[in-house]
Image 1 (cartoon, rainbow, N blue to C red):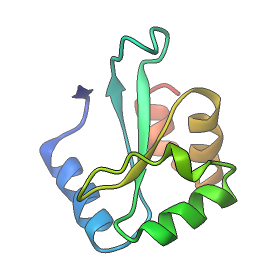
Image 2 (cartoon, helix red, strand yellow):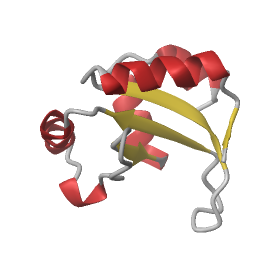
Image 3 (spheres, one colour):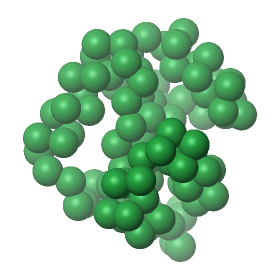
Image 4 (cartoon, rainbow, N blue to C red):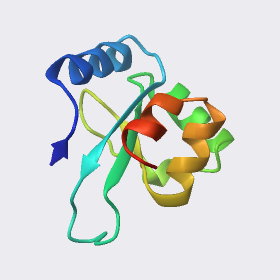
Length: 99
């Protein structure tokens, strides 16, 4: 489940993804397989070739893509999440979610 974002933020991410942009969305997250992880950043793009290439440039395997039918994305957690958010200067997300 996603927490800590507005409907408008989610819709903006979806629009960017559908438009073939690399789009970032960070939110609070609870998942039983990751008990210590409290946030996730979804990096999506409907242009899957572009998304896979972006992931390769960031050291992410194409096998890690969540092949959601309309919103394919990588889920970034822990140190990779922090590293990539800093790289792309997404300081607002870092501060907002205390990453």
